[in-house]
Length: 248
Image (cartoon, rainbow, N blue to C red; front, side, top):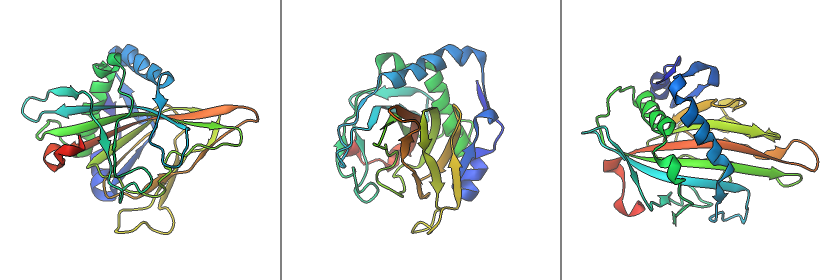
């Protein structure tokens, strides 16, 4: 019920990331209502209490799912925490973070379930689930007010712990900045980004594997005496046999 014109899997294999503008996606009409309900969630996120820089500019909710390779069943895991190593995230890593849970109405949202399965298929180039996966869903809003920027990646240039990640833009409202930088996949990031991209429209998306160095520039309110925000959906995928059990 979701299709895309790009060969995301080949891009991941060759470049370790794929940039997919919104016009390359198509969504079945029957997903419209659940997609609209899902977008409404970003008006009901809660402040991230774990920002080591003292900032209150990040709002979020989090959910975790188990995907069975044997049955293809997607099962929500309640009361799950999110863990990143301090080497991966030197600002906020090294602790189990328990963000506000996804809304009850969101856990079984049809659009979200379709998107999770669609993204995994693109990343693995496999139409059928053959492994067990743990899948994290992060609903994030970064706020900016006049004179006070918000940082989508306060940890700076970094790589993620997860096997694969997809990121979908939900909204940009009254902001400048928020530029994506991609630095390649070597042992250290290159001095200059190899690719620079600004997500502008709903569902401008990118996909990447754990080897990619990347960052996003701060956002600034675009007008005086105002506020703006940047809303994104992050979905991360980790093979279950690679997960340390006490990270959940």
